[in-house]
Image (tube, rainbow over the protein chains, first blue to last red):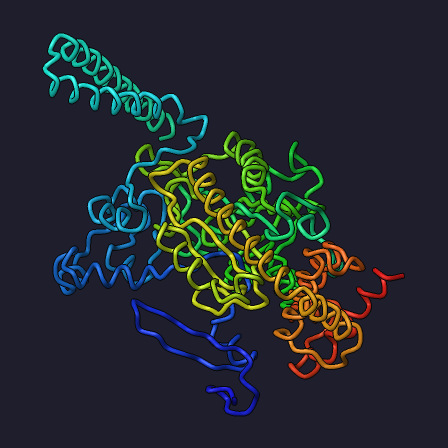
Length: 187
Length: 350
C-alpha cells in the first residue's frame, strides 16, 4: 500500500483512530507520519484537552460560545484571558487558577473526577494545609453528628471549628500586615 | 561541546521485578515556580531567568553533584531526537522549548527537564515494575528543589501546572509493557479497552491512538487531582499486575500448544537480526519482540535482557543517526540499522 500523503513510499505505519466510536484509518510512510506529528516517541501521554473543552462548550457549561469568547476577564498577573486559555489549553502562570477558579472547577472535575488536592504538600505550605485539611474533616464530622442528633458532640466540634477559623483569620491578617510592611520598606 | 554519546540507560542494563513483561517504569512530577509565567507564555528573557535560577540551586549542589547539564539549543537535532527515543526528554522539549535544558544523572535514571511545558519536570525511569521506587527517587530530588525554590502550589488544587490535566500531584506514572502473547491470542484489545475504563491511558510505542508496534504498550494514570501519589501508584500497579497475570496465562497457553512454533520463531528472528542487510524499524522491533518472547519462555538462552533492551533503542531512527553522526534518508536508515544490530550482537556473542 502506498502512503496516503506522498503517494511515493510504501505505507508502513497504520494509524487507527477511534474518537467516540468514529473510526478513521491513516496509512503513512515513516517520513510523512513524522511530519504529521502522529509519531510521538515520548512517554508523555497525549490528552485531547481541546476536544473536552469544546464538548463542554457545546453542552453550554460555559454559556454560549460567543459569550465565552467575549469574556475579557484577565488573569491579573499574566493577562491571559479565559478565551485564550480555551484556545491554547494552557494556563499562563500560577495566578491563573485563582483568576479562573469558577470556570476551571467544572473542567478539572471532568478530567480528574476529584477537585481537591490530597497528595504531597511542600514543606513550606505544610502547616497551613494540615490546618485546612483538619478543618474540612471536622466539618464533615459535624455534619454526621448533627444528622445522628448527637448535639453535645456537635457543639464541641462547632467550637473547635470556630477556634481554628479565628486562628486562620488572625494569621491571614498578620501575613497581610507583614507583606504591607515589607512593601513599605521596598519603596 | 562534546557530542553526545549513545550510552545505555539504567533501565536497559539493569533488571527489576516482572522484567519479563514490564520493561521499564517511569514517574514524572510537574512543578512550576511562583511568580514566573509558565514557559508557553513566557518571553525568552523570562525562561532564561528560570533556567538560571534552577541552575543556581542545582549546579554542584548536594543531590546533583554528578549531573550532566545539556542545553537544548547547544544540542544538534539528532542528539535531541536520540534523547527523546531513550525517553529522557519529551518531543516538546526537543522541538519547542525556549532555554530548555536537561539535567541528567550518569546512570540516565533520574533527570530534570527545565522549561518544558512546565518549568520543571522531575523524572525517574527504572527497569521492571518499580513505580514506587521511581517515585521515591523523583521525590528525593523534589524535596531538595522545594527547599530552595518557591513552588507554585495552591492549598486546594495542589501543584499548579500549565495544563489542567496535570494539576494536583503533577504526577504521571507509566509502565512500558511487552505483551506478545495477548497480541498473538487476539485478547489485547479487550484488556487494553478495559484499562481506559478505569481511568488509565494506553498507548502504543508511537503514542495515543496508534497501533501496538513490537507488542509494546505504555500504560499510565490519567487522574492527578483528588488522589494522592500513593493511591495513583497503587491503582496503576494493581491493574498492571492483573495485565501481567493475563499475559503470563496467555504465554503458558501458547507454550503448551505451540512450543515448537515459538521456538522456531525466536530462532528465525535471531537469524534475521544476525544476517539481514535491509531492515525497517517495524520489522526490527517485531523481530526483537519474537526473540524476547523466546528468551522469556526459556526457549533461547543465547541472548539476555540487556541485549534485547539495547537493540530496542538502537534501531530507532534518532539513535541510528546519532551513531552514524549524520542525517540519514529512510533508505539509508534501513541499511544502517542491520549494521548496528550486528555490531551489538557481535559484542554480545564475542
